[in-house]
Amino acid sequence: MIDNSSDLNEILKYSLKMSAQKMRTLAVFDLDSTLFNVSTRTQKILEQFAHEYELDDLKTIEILHSDWGIKEALLRKGYKDEEHKELHTNLRDFWFQRFFSNEYLHYDVPYAGAIEFVLELAATGAEIKYLTGRDVERMGRGSKEILLKWGFPCTDEQLILKPHRSQDDELFKRDWFIQLDREHYHKIYFFENEPVNINAVLEHCPDVEIIFLDTTHARKQTVTAKIQRIPHFKRS
Image (cartoon, rainbow, N blue to C red; front, side, top):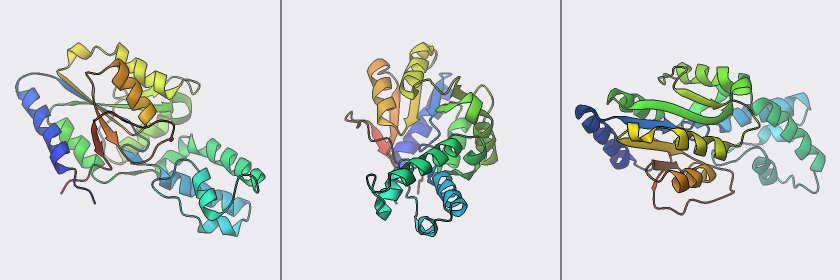
């Protein structure tokens, strides 16, 4: 397992130093594929689909941590789009309805070291916020419940969700940082896994220090900027 101790410990030390000097630090965390491994959510949905439709072959499919959505697992099993179009469509619809819902968020599991790091960072005096592409209606209640369930600090003010599902994640996160009174803080960190969101924030808010959670993403863009990359929050 890759050792992130140096990079993450430096963030903790810097935040503590800023607090001692009465300077404010803000740490903003994405949720899906940043703090939480969501492959377990998709695995549960796939298992239910296989059970309901009596498709025993699908019960042997393992969702990998690096999978994005449900399609990659089907392709890996040999179910090609052109030959199994109906299966792909039915499973995607089944997955989509459940993946973006309060009820299934409870199958997510925090990445190694995530809880400890957020708690330690909060203890240094840093302000913690969660900026997610999840929307209030479908995933607001479950998002707060799972954060508290795993021991993350979370109040209504700390959890920032999209007001409506139709909003674009990239624009929502970009605009949130643009509208943030960034001069209020001496240092702002943003932990995020999606290159599209990272690139948008880098372009419009270069003063924000971004830590790229190199877990999985939508494969739409890559991060070419020289920023910190970590696969998890585990420290030795």
